[in-house]
Image (cartoon, rainbow, N blue to C red):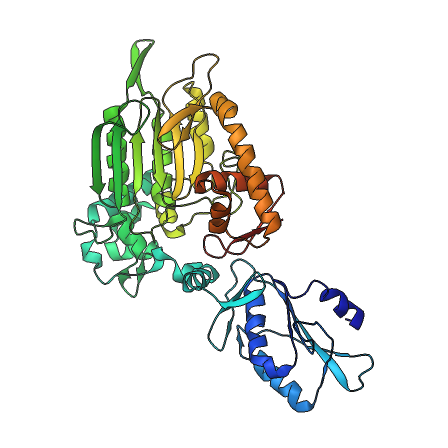
Length: 480
């Protein structure tokens, strides 16, 4: 790097990716910024420039200066190899600029700290990283070590698990050719060990979620079910809230569907065949996906099963894996379970497939029964799978979920596009004016609902107009 490069770099003053200090007398503060760069988008730290006037002064660099810089860098963890550049200042013999470049944070990488404290960059300022964001990045850096499903609870022992459900899962695996028949002769401990569901002899949370007995200590192992009158939530006909392990909740959810959905019969030859108005395999796939892939570290949230006159909605507190969206989920994609231990056992028990093919089978089953393809939508608190009960009348379009009411796709295009375009333009304008702005600030600035703002942001991201950087929920920000 040359002095000309430095002059060009500082032209725009200090910003999100640049910090200048007058001298190494501010070395500690500089290292706070270095840590922040490492936890955000990277940046340059330069000593020897006055922050306000941006006058290039440099400083005299002795061996002791180099040692102090080296010791300061060693305070960054995880350890990294940073080699400062010492650039001569024209017209000031013996004076040098000290320049360091730091790479940005990569998703899945452990967050950096300086002397045990994490920092991050918010626009042009360095701040202590919020505890929630730091812990989220720690979990993401070692998902198997910190994942909810791999933790243990002091309240549950192996003896507390439901042995009948465990052996029924084994029988399912044997029938599907995914487990040897000899597994039925194994004790419960051996079966749980085979499935890697024990830690130091205690069942991990995945084992509790799958096989909890009557003394179920996990509040998130619950299922809300309702049959609503009509197509809104204004009046319900039946409502239940059940608790149990995943296998029990799956059975209870399917029983509720059989109770409130119609059976259609037809004669084939001399045999009468009866079919649920929605393919059983589509309902089961949607429900087991919700049970398998939800965020179980949200103990206050539960899975919802709502039956309306024209559709069934299954909601869960969880989101799609990276790269998967409601628009491309029906295309082939590899399986990326949020809870791999749960997914492994449900696969062995033949409740799910492990190649990401479940959605395609749902689509095929619905089309074979002359029903619209299932729909998936993302909302602030999770994901909703929508399976339709009726074939749309000619000239009509399948209904699209709109909070507590339904709107056809055609009506949606006609009545909502104008509002969507207005919101899109407002979002684009505020991000252009305030690069690095976060979601709450965008919502506040444009005066729209969070849901409509999220849809506008998704539209802009799809067309490459804006970019999302940082960590979801707590650390993310938007820029052009």
